[in-house]
Every structure is written in C-alpha cells, then in structure tokens.
Length: 159
Image 1: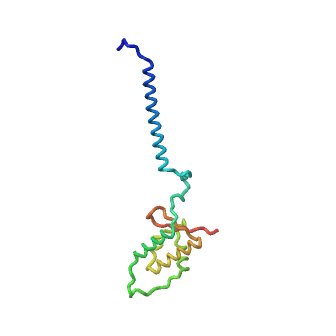
Image 2: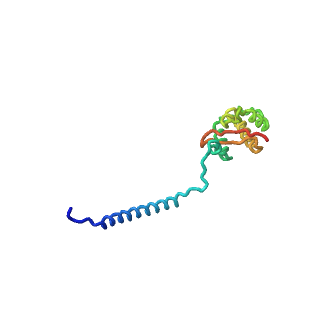
Image 3: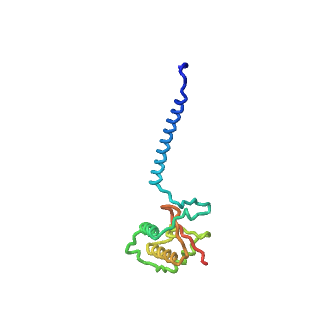
C-alpha cells in the first residue's frame, strides 16, 4: 500500500460526507427544538422574583379557602346537647373589637389561634362573620403562605 499514490480527492470526499452528516443531525435537532418549543410555550413576561418581593410567596386567600377553613373549625367543635343551651349573646361589634385587639406586635394573627379561643359553634360563626366584615371594611387582609398552611390575618394600617 505504500506504493499506491494517495488521491487528495478521497480526503475531500470524506470531509464532504462528514459535513453532510453533521448538517443532517443539525437539521434534525433544530426540528426537535421547534417541536418542543411549539408544545411547551414559555410566556413572554417571565419574571424573576426579587429578594424583597414577599408577595410572590403569599397566596391571596379567597372566600372559598376561608369557607373551607370555617367548615373544618365547625366540624372540630363538639355537638351541642340539649342541656348545654345556655348561651351568652355574642355581639358582632364586640367580636370585631376583640379580633382587632388580638393582633401581635407585628400586626399578624393566625386563623387557628383566633378560632382556638372560641368556646362553641355560635362564637365561631360570629368570629367568621366578623372577619368577613373587617375584610369588607379594609381593616384586615388574609393570606396563606402555602397550600394547607395556616391562614394569616394581617391588620391593615389606616390612612
């Protein structure tokens, strides 16, 4: 084989064939990328949360979430028997005042802690109605850090 001359065209043909293989693979990868980007679109307004952007970690609690928590609290209370019907009247205004006085120094209160002070179902109902009224009056806001976490009540500052 030493006696045979090396044809320079053979090397060029090999390089050309290798180039065509790379080109085909490149086109195939481009098609796969296009298919994936078509199936899994990204939104144009992706944002990166800043360090001070605490709102992204808090979930705004809606009325449905609050109603579920209310039902759980009602289910935990014992059933009233006929001989336990001596009720003290619970005023909505008094309960709202009690709730506003119950906040910590940082202006937060957990729903669980608030309901743990209730002695019976009537008081839970009045507490729940008081919370709804305080939300309506923009005196409090309600958040939940993550799913199934305790609901936090935050006192809003008056302007």
